[in-house]
Length: 152
Image 1 (tube, rainbow, N blue to C red):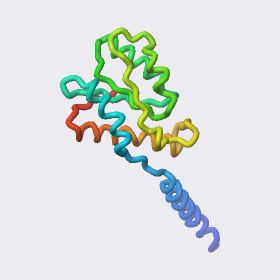
Image 2: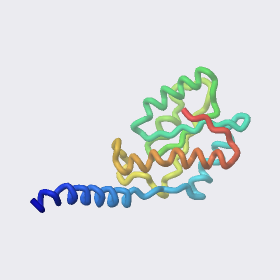
Image 3: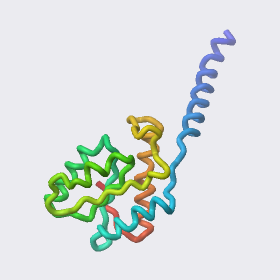
């Protein structure tokens, strides 16, 4: 009878420890001077009337990003900047892929501190979550620089 009462308690303790261990491995990659020095000049060149549209992507999202950029190009929105979350994102964007109005603007600020270990971040993994957490940090950074930020 005593063991039966202890089983739920042991399960709860194991789950709590697993969560603690998982959160300990989720090291936040904070923005540093190297990252901001790569992004800031591109944002300054692309912003229109103090407004910028930062777009975040990894290679897996590039088809959707291209669709968005084509739509923005069609309505002549050019104050966007792609902040690449992996080193494979900018190459397919830099070619222009038929954009008529805006030249591509893509930067990969994480070369010295990659967000992933193998360049791939599957959905709901620690590395995917680390990538997702970059977006609010960049938004805060751009807002602190005085830009109005339009999120897409």
